[in-house]
Amino acid sequence: LECGPGTYLDHHLLWSNRPHVAYHALDVTPAIVEAGRAKGFDDVRLGSIEEIPHKDGAMDVVYCRHVLEHLPSYRTALLEMHRVARRCAVAVLWRLDTDAERDSIYYNTVDGVANTFHNMYSQRAMSVWLTSVRIAHRWEKADADWLLILDAGYTPG
Image 1 (tube, rainbow, N blue to C red):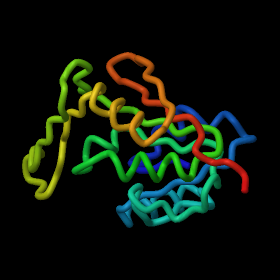
Image 2 (cartoon, one colour):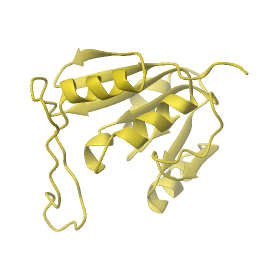
Image 3 (cartoon, rainbow, N blue to C red):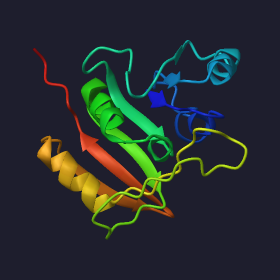
């Protein structure tokens, strides 16, 4: 499940050459959902990463790229990604301050676009919070980005 697919670039780069992968997408923007349907994707839904409309453990991998920085807080989104993931959840983040004690929240930072966030979250603060809610995780560097990998949240009933 890709949350916030935007132009569907990651589908092209990561999954299009893997015919065994069932691709699902979720976005809050109706035009992006329609664009995915026009590309022939069967399961592209209108919805929020903060309230994913799938059952616990429904997806092998839940993925978002440069989405969390645009939310007022990453916590609900990460909890939802973790809940829905059977194997792991992966969040790609940029401009991450690895040493800061606290997150930096920036509001209305995109010219001409109201009610926008472009936050710089602290890797340290995120890890402290994830540990406090007992979500096993690790960080990996990928070029200018950081990958936050959450171990699976789903345990069969």
